[in-house]
Image 1 (tube, rainbow, N blue to C red):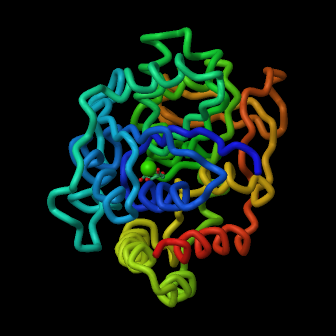
Image 2: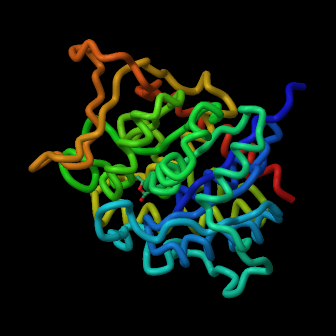
Length: 311
Ligand code: BDR
Ligand code: CA
């Protein structure tokens, strides 16, 4: 058995962030070094609270560090319409989690962990990229020591504007820092995450798994599916963020293309767009493995297996 891959999950839970975390914690191919939180779906005090609540539900004891409560340049924007007022509406959540966040800012924890590592830490951001970019700006020595960054963000189309996906649009300046950093990137944009839509059948399947964690995920999915119907008229809820963790566990689930991805930070209509050079028209050096395909059966089997593994 190979050593588990060390990951820091940088997230804004968020229904799909929570499911991503549940998938990561269940799999012994991954070792969660820390969870760091960022403002995105809701303000950072709420995303931190939600991360701690999910840790309680799954019995996970890793450091949780609260991070940035606003993007690097812009005003904060949140996505209550999708995730509800708490950021994790649907299930009955424990009001007060049993643990608190550690007394260190997420940016400093990322810097400390990466500097102390042997270059074997992978960052897994599933919210706006503020913490990751801030860490790179504050301590550039971390950049060559990050093994890989596996990102949920972007797309060749948008879900927050016609051109931009939410995570990138919220903090496009941070995304620019990260995409231009030279760190190996694997990027899961809407092109692939929309192939991971939990339908009524998926929810029914998970409903038959007799664990508390499966029950929790089913409640999350009912709410998430409802808002995706209301806001986007989708029949299923895309579990965007879990694509990152699924890739780390079993890359064969995904079809990836090595391409150039640049971030638009000035456009009149396209601010926050990921310009994905799928046809290599720019001649620019590829900087990312970009997800274009997902094998649905394998993806849902992996998630079902994870839910069943919790007792
Ligand atoms: C992304 O935005 C958030 O609402 C989700 O958690 C996901 O990370 C999808 O655009
Ligand atoms: Ca997210």
